[in-house]
Image 1 (cartoon, rainbow, N blue to C red):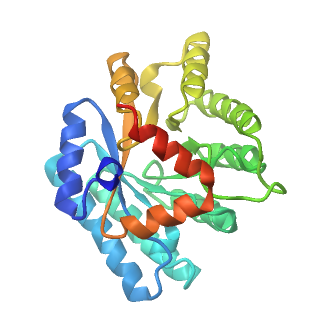
Image 2: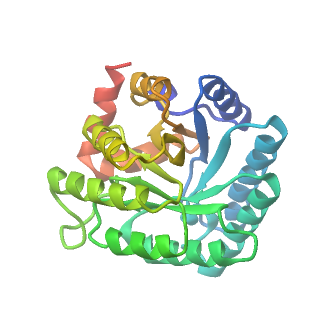
Length: 279
């Protein structure tokens, strides 16, 4: 099962997958799996993998960027450490002509993540080289997006995969879907390039309808999906002329990563099981 959703254990494995996806007309985001490091040295080793990835992206001229989790960069050890490491990564992205997406984790990290991305984006020369993920199931997301758009920051909009209490997140799928559509419309009407990350055909249809009605160019945003999920739909969207970016995880930490995600929300188990049975 893991080989369906994880691109391998080594950097060379994920680079090979990236090249293959590029040849199919798809951009990629590379994600070195791992989170919640226990030492500063471990955090810097994790960052070193991303520095190597950005070197390879530049050398191989890949249509690719990277996604980084702040806990993997030492956030739970020291906010200053994570900030320093993230700043070094974005500086490298500027030099390599690529982009760093700061992934969103559980709600206890939402505010610090938004604050850090805003600070990094405001540094001279960093604008356009760092973005963030916003989760539609959180009540606060509309306000976060309004603030991020004032700064011109690129957003990946997703539904959210962590278990969150009903006091801060919509518990029902229909409410999450409704909020997702509202936030998608705000993002795509902003004039900033964003990623609409979903495998839900209803959300994709709503996005297509909105951009058609508003005359929004297909080149002004992209759909994003996970590696190995709805490969048929990924290819279909490319054939229709939409931008498609595939989020490609790799690395030795795949097992604990997947076990945590599956344990947190039963819906994640159902989602993966369904996608094992389709192309």
